[in-house]
Image 1: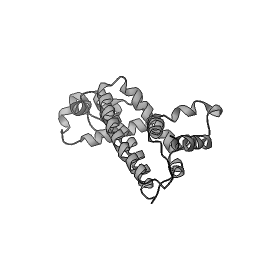
Image 2: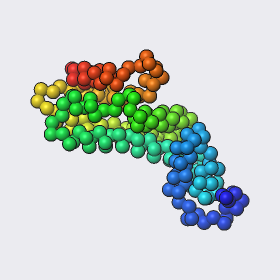
Image 3: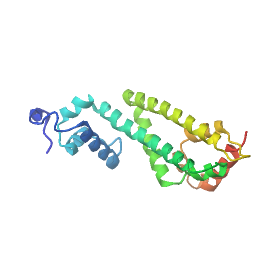
Length: 203
């Protein structure tokens, strides 16, 4: 049982680390979602007191800013790094290569990632600490993509034309999650890929 704030003197400040608390918070979010996170349950999962959590993070918003900021960054960089790792295996890059490597709207992993990011973005509207964190992360992420797009342009196969602006605007900003709200009236993966072929290779 987690000690109450009044019993906090029995818990060593060093006995539970920030990482322990963040692991517990992440487990709560994975199980119950962002809105379901309860600081008392995080404390219970980390076997610590509420006051230890507040000592490390200030309040619930501070805890959310840390754990959701971490998840947001991991999601951004995991997607980028996996994509670029595949791109860099190619001696020459074609538009068709890029189309096949990009996630399609119905891929489960991409959908889950997008849904988590939407929850984080919604939370950031009421949490200024989180908002600042994800704004900074997003700026750095765009810098990474600019370098990635430089690499793609430098390694295009002869005769290939790559519309960098289209890639940046449509693929780095768009949110596939909204497509699921359309149900059967939404576009198919094949329609989406043909759109990419038509647009990414045009000037």
